[in-house]
Image (cartoon, rainbow, N blue to C red; front, side):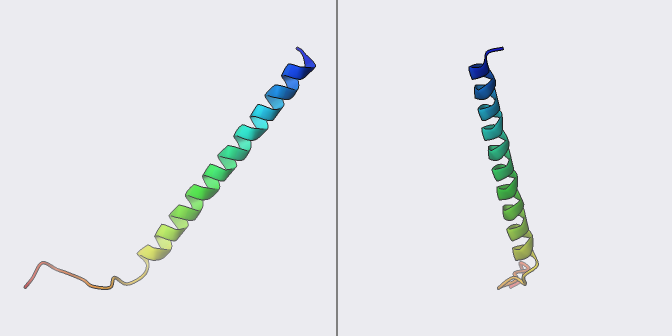
Length: 50
């Protein structure tokens, strides 16, 4: 293959891996934050009773 094409492929692959790592990190932070909030007691509990 062409050296220019090889470098282009390497750069695209690197960019894709960095984007994937950022996406996984974001999902992990969101899930961790959601889990942390789920453990907090609710401000008001309604049971449907008057």
